[in-house]
Structure formats: structure tokens, C-alpha cells
Image 1 (cartoon, rainbow, N blue to C red):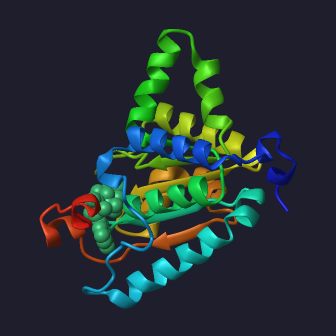
Image 2 (cartoon, rainbow, N blue to C red):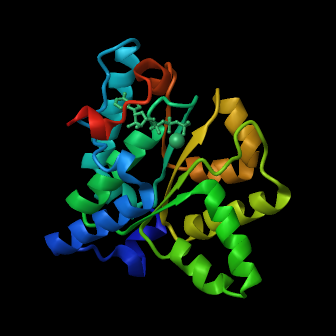
Length: 225
Ligand SMILES: Nc1ncnc2c1ncn2[C@@H]1O[C@H](COP(=O)(O)OP(=O)(O)OP(=O)(O)O)[C@@H](O)[C@H]1O
Ligand SMILES: [Mg+2]
């Protein structure tokens, strides 16, 4: 059993209005495109439906069992090529985490995060900045790797420190990353970072074609209108 059960952050948001307010804050940060993304409106009926359904089933079970998973500090690692719906399903899980379970969730775009860290260092505000990465029950990072590139030693050390601190505290970290296969992910993150992320985590590979090219950038928000 992980340290998360004993964490001071184990307290959940009980008030439904406060849950909605936390969810709307998340939507403001994440953007309208992802506002209505749910596990139910993930389209699996086209090609590769069996693989897509497999991933959806895993995430439905992950969502239903979130309290136990979060208490154990287990993470979520969504890997795969661009446009395959990793961030759609990450948002769906963040939605369930807040609205169904009342967990505190902080989402960051990975690359923006590195820029924010640099800005915090410049204004000598790193303590406050890092605190907000260590305090939420769930920290979700989308694509903390430059496309077709590697992390600099500095970026990797920031990522490693954040992951290590949360891992040691038994706090859950969720991540999406654009890679063609698992070996590529291991090379990008170095095994020490990925090992911590993967310890007890649900790891899913999205091995199908991009939804963007298939639907000419139709978002789930517009799809439901
Ligand atoms: N199976 C799907 N059903 C409905 N909408 C989808 C599906 N897959 C992707 N989308 C939509 O396509 C857009 C792109 O998907 P998303 O951002 O989740 O891809 P991604 O795998 O994170 O890509 P990248 O690696 O480039 O960041 C989003 O608007 C998302 O809601
Ligand atoms: Mg993405």
C-alpha cells in the first residue's frame, strides 16, 4: 500500500458546487476543445474498434476504482502517436476524478510547465510554484516532451524532481506522451523517470490512426452539438 493513504491531501471535495467549480477551473486551463470529453463520447466504432474498446474498458474500470488507485498513488500513462485521443481520455478521467470522486486535480501542458519553472526561477518564486505541483492529489501532464525532440538535461531534472517528490509522497501523476512505441518513451524519459511513473500505474498504448486527420479536426465539443 502506498503512502498516499496517509497523505494530508487524502481529504476530498465533498460539496457538489465546489466540485463543479473545480472542474470549470480545469476547463479554463485545459481549453474548450476538451470541455465535453468523456469516456462515453470517445468514438470507438471506426477502424481498430476492438483495441479502442479495450482501452476504454481499462479506463472505465480505472475511473470506477479511482479512490483505491489514488490512495495507492498509482498513476496513469497514456502513450501513442498524435491525434489518437490520449488527451481526450485524460480529460475524461480528470472530469471523473473531480466530479465523481472530489479529488483535487492540477493539469499542465508539459512544455509550458518548463517555461513556467524558468519564469519562477527568474522571479525567485520556485518554492510556491513547486508547491502547487506537489499538493494536488492528481497531477496531470500533457506531452512533457518536445515533438521529435529530447528533453534537455535541465528539463529532465525538473521532471525527475517533480515525479520523484510525488512518487515518494504516494501521490498520483498522470501523463500523456506522443510516441510511436514504448521504447521511444523509455529513451525520452530515461528509465528512472519512467519507472517511477509506471510503478503500479495503468499504462495504455494508443495504436491506431489519428482522429484529427480522419475527421478533419472535428472536436468532441462540436461533435456533440
Ligand atoms: N476516438 C475519438 N472520439 C472522439 N473524439 C476524439 C477521438 N480521438 C480524438 N478525438 C478528438 O480529436 C482531438 C485530438 O485528440 P487528442 O488531443 O486527445 O489527441 P492526442 O492523442 O492527445 O494527440 P497529440 O499526441 O498530438 O497531443 C480532440 O478534440 C479529441 O477530442
Ligand atoms: Mg495530446
